[in-house]
Image (tube, rainbow, N blue to C red; front, side, top):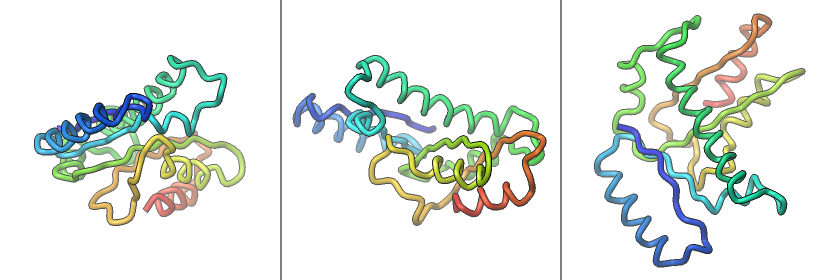
Length: 157
């Protein structure tokens, strides 16, 4: 199983954060992979005019795109197809995980998209260094080149 959870905002107080941390420790015992998104990090992608509900929509969108990327690996036809067993192998007993998405166009689009995917501002203290496994879903139009796929995959690794 994969867990995707949020941590409270700083303004919610120390007590609530402590309870959340205890919950995370307990949840970690029951999931293979855990993605934690601190709500406080919404300030990194919001501005002073961002409404409270719009901030959550931004976070939901990042999660939705990331999770869809994983499920698309299994259900959408592609040049390199994976099945559930492949994904389970990568995600089984991985511990903390990160999820990222990137989209770009124009010159250097592959590298730009890969950079965006590995620098998710919503995640805290999660790095690709020491990763035990990586799932990469690269999607592009008919003009996507072999060299672009190679460049994006190598940048993520």
